[in-house]
Image 1 (spheres, one colour):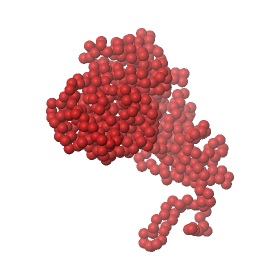
Image 2: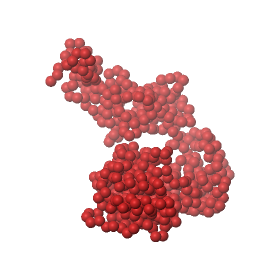
Image 3: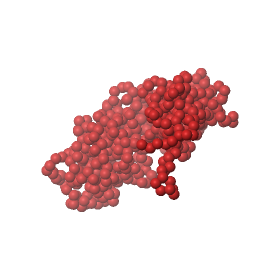
Image 4: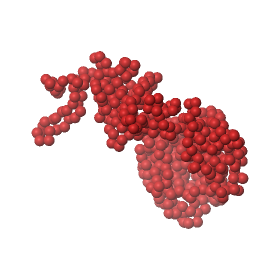
Length: 554
């Protein structure tokens, strides 16, 4: 069906829907685009039928008959790959300021495009991610959608973890980069497109407070050959659109961890002999070309070992490592000269000849920590109670003393407070006293936000972690807000709180309200005496006697 051109200004969004044998989901997908609160006059819906034989084409014609904003395009020569070809066909006809790619088995929430366009307009961003949800258990990214992000980039948020193209793209960016989908791929055709857009966008926005995009059931898991074929343009795209250095290493690390290493694990299956002979040499070339010396140490120890064996062409050893990964994960650790090593069978095996760097886990040992409570002890001391230990390393309570570390934001101030072990049978259980009046070398803690860390030690190994995000259910530290004595004649307002979105513990220290003789903690109407307001509170500074005091309202 030929494209009908409408008079008037160009639409805000071109919604491109590739479809091949997409019944019955195509009806719901296209209808969700037609029902957008942005308005049909501001939409250009392009549905591309790619040789369907199940009635999809006829259903699209039926929907288009009642909607002038819906245009149906039939590919004269259906693509043999995935959705890339039909998407390219739609892109060639798009006229909107923005483009959104809608899968034929998914749907948009009614207000999705209006919110996403507003986010792009207000912040001048080229790509907008709308929160993705799934009703059937299909995995969706979560970290990037913890909160709205007005303007960020691919290196500063978790956006790169979602490379599917179900996003809002500024069309001028697409045309400037001449972006198109690899039409020959059956799997992952959207990832290089999205990666290139991310890496060149003037900014990225995230709409996280509204369920914008409802995923469909998805396609069947791809075969190994399709997975490896899809990796090639990903590495090529990352290399083409980044310069050597930290940013390129960050992107390549993602692809090595999420694409390359899983492919190596799949190749180790006994029935993949032919695929191993075909793909391992190519995967080795990618590892040599794209895993820099600076990137290599940032991989986990198992990943470093696999990549090392791949880069050195030791394919048999690589397959052995992958096949025995579950067994070897239970191997212990060696602590030596301030470093911790994974005792893998290849560690210092003279026949294996693998460098120690492949087994160094010093900076990767997890710290188990838990906040049990935070409450006032005395006039100006906040007592923090909890538990902390380095996983897999036994600590000596006399030698390995942990510290609570306070770091003031936007400054280099740091205060270290030794913790006290509070249980003889559990050296990980501790309490630390934060003295607001004298905690900084005998002087009061300065005003500002102080983030709370733990420096945990065992066998000469030290690990510092942010503290507080693991705590007892129902723990409310907001009740610990207080005005306290902060030195002779000085008072400070101290508010312990959990940060958003990560729920770590911080202290907000500021000047006490000037001239405030008390702090009101509760004000309620008397249950039986109408017109009587009952006010409860405490006099300041703490310890001031209440006898002879009057409450005056003005």
